[in-house]
Length: 149
Image 1 (cartoon, rainbow, N blue to C red):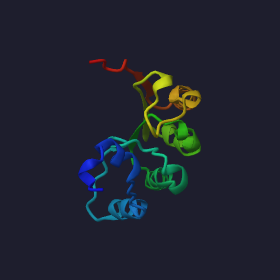
Image 2: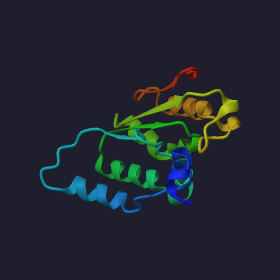
Image 3: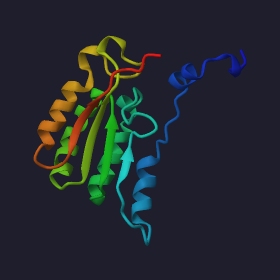
Image 4: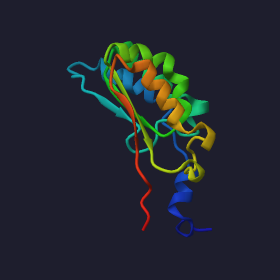
């Protein structure tokens, strides 16, 4: 079947590509002579905690590189899997090196594919992140009613 007959959303949800060497590339970039640190944003184009992250742990490895290099960054997610990395995020927050933001855009019964299950929506993860980082850095949840045309 020609690729043009598939819906773009279906392709996005089923054809996954991962840069498994991303942590090594990031470490090399940080070590480059003349590199000037500026905050990096994870999860801007796609959620940093895609379903594939559970197995590959690339986001966790990137956070470890940021921690080693004391590099500032922010993280935006809809997924409760961020709770897995609280052990890394909490010390970074204490050093004012990370900001964690949650995007809650849909009611729990209409979770988009790949996001946390309704019972594990990021609201609980958001509460845990805020509790861990309350005194150290800004973190928060934003919610928006879905657009109805």
